[in-house]
Image (cartoon, rainbow, N blue to C red; front, side, top):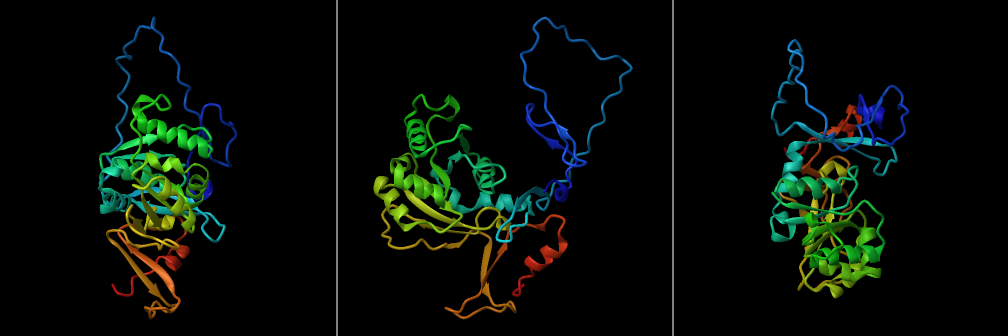
Length: 300
């Protein structure tokens, strides 16, 4: 991954391994220390030249925001290159405009595209991040953490008290919480889940414990900047059976095509092609794979 990314350095914690990864050096930021109160600041020598300023980066919505590596179904890591415009499109979707998304739980690893939704999707809308401590949590721990923060108790830092209005959980974690600690969902107004088939029994258990909860099945590969589709189940809506993947996000197109990129008839198997403003540029450093998987829209 480091080699294909073209990294020139790897930034690690001060106590991390000091080895190099091939030709890539490892940089260790200095550990934080208390300032010396007796030190007297000294002016730099008069002859010291001013450090040159880096030229400002040109502003463009097509500028690269990040490269996130995913193996997908192939097992081979691919660097998905996502532009700033795709992140902006995710944040601007109307589904995230409600009060439930003013305070969003942040617990996903930075290497997982759900973090794009949690962090940038929230900050770009002027929302607040509710950070989860960097400690393992079992279902009971999740329940205590979220319900305590909702009540403003001592379990959360002052900056995160008041609780989150919405959260994203993988389908597996959602099912585990629904089974072992369904009261967790009483602390939320809206929960997004996905990444795998969402268990209908888990949805029923979560809604039984939290009748006012809105459950959303969010679907999308990393190549579509976290989500491409969403299906919302409002509190009063009846439901039985699996959750569908829903409808496309704003600015997203969905087409079911055959191997010749022709639309298939209803009920005929085909492959789902996703397009629109949330699409990544392609795979970093892999033009052949990009040309194979990122094809021109046959409808223009």
